Each structure stands twice: as structure tokens, then as C-alpha cells.
Length: 341
Image 1 (cartoon, helix red, strand yellow):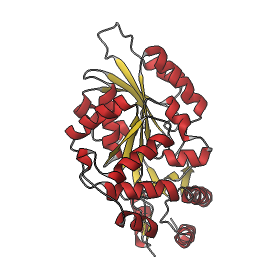
Image 2 (cartoon, helix red, strand yellow; image 1 turned 45 degrees about the vertical axis):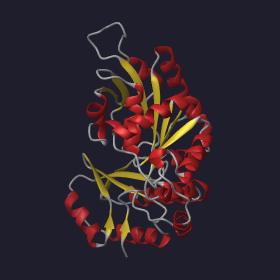
Image 3 (cartoon, one colour; image 1 turned 45 degrees about the horizontal axis):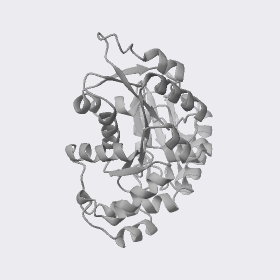
Image 4 (tube, helix red, strand yellow; image 1 turned 90 degrees about the horizontal axis):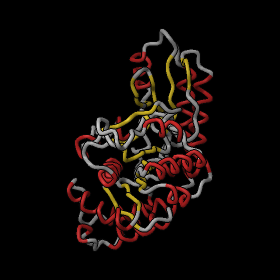
């Protein structure tokens, strides 16, 4: 049996999704004439209570576009030191927008309003970069799938308003946060100026993200997407998959979260595991006990065809997803319980 827990990005389209893709009505989205893309953009904007949305080939491009919208070269954004926009987007904040990052050491990737306030540079102190944007990631990747309390996000919004800062949500796994918390998507739309949401992680679409915001911001985002090379032609085949996922594939997230918590329960019992971080959604991060060689551990699981990923600094990660079956789940249990070091 083969099990891939590297990421929730490795899923394949479900039969219903393939049918939706096959039957999609398409046009040229560069001219905004693809009906399936237009429908998806309207759907996701309405879902979050915003005016407009724009379909992107990747979440990274959506985030980079948002940063470009809210900043000018030489300015600075504020984010957690675990943030995807800082760690995993190829230095795009500097390459694309010419901005730097003021990093906060939050709790599992989550930052507070007081921490944000402490990082804002005085606007009249020209020796420092001008603070213009706060970026929040929800759920947090390096933070092990942790999600925010809306009350803290409301406090950060007040800080942003007081200091005239933009507020952007990297919502690559916002669907997991919504399911785990029972929060309303419109609550996020009310708080953030712009939001990026990904369809190719928990919801199981093959490709695509969206940037959501005001009509003005999305109109400007269209130009930035063009500059970044993100315009696609008959993108409706991909948009149809995303629409199907929104309409039909939320329920499996609950199962993903259950399986992740059960993996934590098993890992907690094993003598060769030093620590398992809290599990709130579908990401399990753990470290090995002192004296257990990481390469040896990796090789033993690789021999059993169980794949996962290293996040560096001794942290290992498992991510559950809709293509991770109950039979595979039980197989992973069995293998973990029989390992010896």
C-alpha cells in the first residue's frame, strides 16, 4: 500500500469533479469571456461578502498580487516569522514589490494586535521603512494548521485602521479554519481588505486560487496578474473544478481533521517521538526523540511506502487530505506501532 502525506495538494479530481470539468462552458478568460471563470469569481466573492474576485493559477501569485496592491517599493509589511509569504514564496515580496518584512514571533504562526502595533514604524521617521500592510495566514502551515480566533483578528483590524495599514489574508487553508471553527466566511470578508483562497488544497481541485476584494482592488489586480504572467485562456475547465469543490467537497475536511488528530494520538504513544505539536485541523507536526536518526526514520517509512515531509530544524510533517483513505490511515497506524529504534 502506498500512502502520500506530503501535502493536501496531491489529491486527484473526484468523478463528479471530472464530469464538471468535462462539461464546463469555456471562453477566453484573458478577455474575461470565460463563463465558468466568471461564475466562480462571482460565487467566491459572494461567499465571503466582497464585491469581486479574480481567478489565479496559484495562491503564491494571488498573495504576491495582493502585496503589490497594498504597498510601494521601499515599504514594509508585517507578518509572523512562520508566514508563507516570507518563507515559501521565493522572496517574492522583495522581487515583485520591493518591500521588506517585519517579522513577529507569534504563537504557532498566529500574531496578536499588540504585537502588530509594536512593529509599526512611525510614519514620519524616514530612516525606517513605511509600514503599510499586515499579512495574516489562516490556517498556519508552519504552525501546524492552527487557526485564529475572530476576536483577535477584529483587534488587529482596529490597529490597521488606526495606522492606515492594509489587511490581507493568506487563506490557503481557510476552508479548514471555517470547518473547524464554524466561522462564517463573511466574517472574514468584513475584516480583510483582500483575501486569497486556495482550491487545490483541502477542497481537492487540481489547480487554482482566487483573490477577493473590492471592485477597485480586483480591477487593479487584473493588471498585476497580467504582468506576472497569470492570464490563462480557457481556464474554465479549472474554474469548474473549483466551483464543484466549493459546492460539494467541504464535508471531507471534517474527516481530514479527525484523521490528523488520531495520528497525533498514535504518535504521542511512541517512545521515539519527542513531541507532537497541537493538532487543530489537518496538519501534524512532530519531532523525534534525542538519539533517533531522522534519515533512518525517514528511510524506514519510505520502505513501507509512507511519504511525508521535513520542515527543517528537526520538524516533520504529515498532512491528511481527501484521498487519504481509512484503509491507508489504519495501515499508517500499524506501521508506526511496529517501528523500532
